[in-house]
Length: 497
Ligand code: BG6
Image (cartoon, rainbow, N blue to C red; front, top):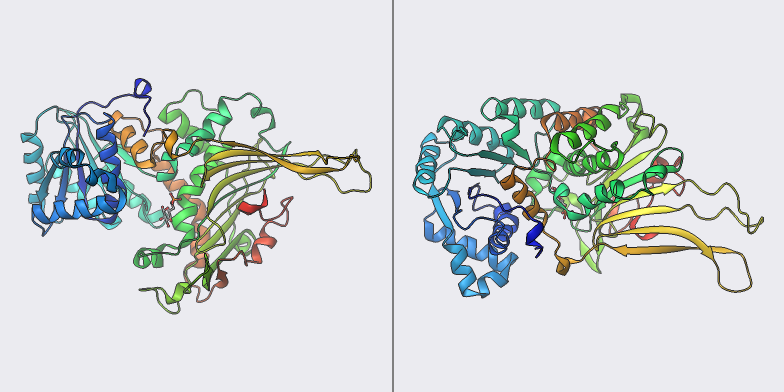
């Protein structure tokens, strides 16, 4: 958490309501982020955290919170004073989300708490509950902003296809206005993703190069070594295309490709992102095999330990054809990007963990220094989001000694490490909700546009009965070489820089 409080807007008092307060997201991310925000003064001391909890006593709930904290932020529990301070901010509201009385009870609890009647409602529940929660809040008068703001936070996945996303938007917008709805994509809360915008628009050397005249291809990826962990139920219905590409990676593509916005405000930025999505070339059914890759991990070895195949994971169907790796080659049909392939890829149980945006520039036209040697390596600019966020530039330099041969060298500029005041994505995003800044949240039209773009792929993959396999812990996906055939340098992997 940053210590530069002087630059940070402090939110007015607001109660924070968590639906799903016993769930995994709450335990892993929300509670630790909230402790940190309270401790740094980012949340007003008059604010409370209300957990909506069903079938559990307050004692049991508080014990669950403590267990979660011990696992994900143990320093807090170890410091008795700090822990007691946090406990004093927690209020439990008992009730079932399917019951209107729960929302009425929540309304009463909010009335009895001091301060203004601002509230942030965080839906940390399975997606099928989003609409019900929104309707319940509205019925209890809790969408009404006459006495304070009321903001609804929705987690990904936002729908599972175009129709369901439209239906959900419609349902939410019938009870909350669009500017009350905050659709979270936690990638946008990562500091290094926001830094991408600063690198692009606060440096004058980038803009002249940022187009088809200098860039050969762009690869945006999130490569993971973890498997699906405990989430088979969700993942069996999602797959890598929905889980990562439709959301995180397409969001990053819009930030990389968008024109400079007229100002750094929510709608100015989102208008520019939206223009990118509108310019993405439609992938026709006959192009699916050519422009996409999908595969599923077989058993293998990660960090020297054997790991099972996807189909052998708990709760996965043994004949599942769900992809754990997906890649799409997009084209953006506008003046800036015509003809530049954007390769978006993501997979689980791969050889290395890294999320990056790699900008691959065109090569020098010939080798001036040694007519027998091949053309020097292409320059590449890499924005690494994780691990070790930073920006790297690949250049060519003279080999030392009596030669003019060249070799590649990499200039490395680490961005910041945990200790340097980097805020967790959830702290960034919840702070934005509390201060009403919607720049880093997806607007309804963006979400629908991204589903619309991948719809033909989802349709083509829907009923298939088999999928290619790759050995866990490797890059053995030959179809990626084919997909990147027209990219200078081919398939770029994290270790290739
Ligand atoms: C989530 C996906 O949105 O992002 C997960 O559902 C994935 O499958 C995760 O592991 C990756 O996030 P991060 O922040 O670890 O890169």
